[in-house]
Length: 209
Image (tube, rainbow, N blue to C red; front, side, top):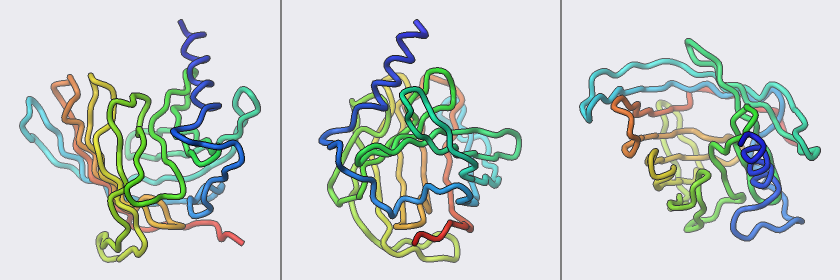
């Protein structure tokens, strides 16, 4: 069974979304260099039996710490997410016009994906299941805390497999990355869920020549 999972994961890496072409390149406005760092303030609301029981806030630091080579000589950037009580890691692969965030485990399961460059009204499956799609609905300025981010694309929609559906709203600014993200797992079968709202507080990115 593990062999089938690995084979399927590699198939995801080598195949594009919708109309990828082998010669397409990822838009340079997507930051993906070692040393790039983002700092977020996260509001986390716990839902038990469809009722909010508590809201906490904490900080998460996201840093691109290294590169690694996957099977098939596929290059991936290692993104580290430092939470107050644990560390998470994603492997980010760029191929054609598609950017995939993968779990750092033997199965390389797809967490989420983006099609660059963003275009208003474009849409694609956000996760492995293609039952639902997210859509770029506008390009706008958005205020996050005390800072306004120009040229931010607003992505919205439902995602996830039938037993784990969630809604997602993300605002992604050119040359900066995600400046705001709202995640609501309304379709999960778990009795306890977490609605999270991520707000970018600061960032430090490698200058692109």
